[in-house]
Amino acid sequence: MAQQPSAASWVKLPAAVVLVACEFLDAASLGRLEICGKSSLGDKTRAWSEKAAGVARGTLAQLSNKRLLAAQARVQELIPSSAGGVVGFAHNVRRWSEEVPFDEFAFTVVLSSESDGFQTTVFPFMRLVADRNEMGAYNNVASFVLFPSGQGADNMSPLMRRASLACAEGTQLDTFKDAHMPRAYMICTRKADGAAVKVAFWDTDDVDEDDWAAMAYDQNSSECTVRFDYGELMIGHGSSQDYQYHMTLNIMFDRPTGQVLAFCSGIYHSTPDLSGSNMSNEMFLALLHARLDESMRARPLPVSEVGRRILNHEHPTSQTAADVANSYGVM
Image (cartoon, rainbow, N blue to C red):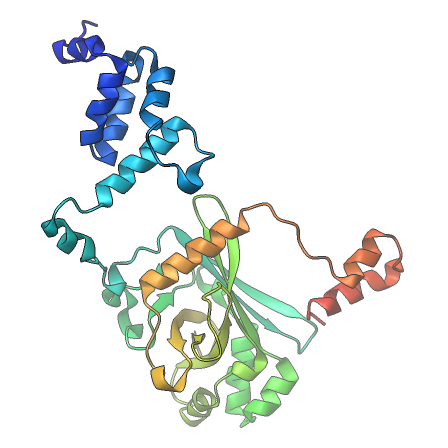
């Protein structure tokens, strides 16, 4: 294939001159230029070294010359070059909550009970819907909705069916909680690499009494709600005693069958002065990515005393399963 005149001219330039020309390109253009002209740099190793010699490395001392110059180009692109640029730098472009994309994640919700031994029902790999139009009838219930991905019987929850029957029989909420120990768990999976992290946990005491009373009062309604409130958010949001978030989980289900129709959820401030205001979807997205990235980094895991004894063969085999389960709060 004949060489284009522009490419031929590029080849004739000394490598150092080529790199000087790169100073006037933004990061995207610089990347395209590297792909198109990398074979035309001649003594490129020396040219990269000469160009990087005058760059302050700071904490980037371990980077190669090539990566250092790429980093410098990206930073330079963001630095204002005029008074007008200051205005542009200060302009923070934010997306409406409905525009934040969550399609790169899949969410799993698990419901557990202990009425007949420890039992779980898993609703795997659901899509998070934040668009009000897609949320349909649930757009005023919470910040976002997870619709079960199964069909029909796949979405049945024995725990919800028991809750419906208990309400019909006039069972008090405390009695139901003592008998069944209902709990809920949310897990997030990133599609790109399969990373998975715990998002939130709702204990038995988090079941809301008002929704239970409403379900008991309206026996004619075919759709019911079991609400977990004040769930523990587990994605490292840096809260303190003065500034905390909690997560809610409204389980919308069909009363006659116990089939789960939707999980309506949201993240809210639990401090009195900020009560009712919710975490932005952009912040939720950033926290998910941060915790998922952290989960993929190799790091030693803490070993419990029971685990240490098992590894050292100091623990009777007959007690292992029970003690391990107890150490994790399963039994």
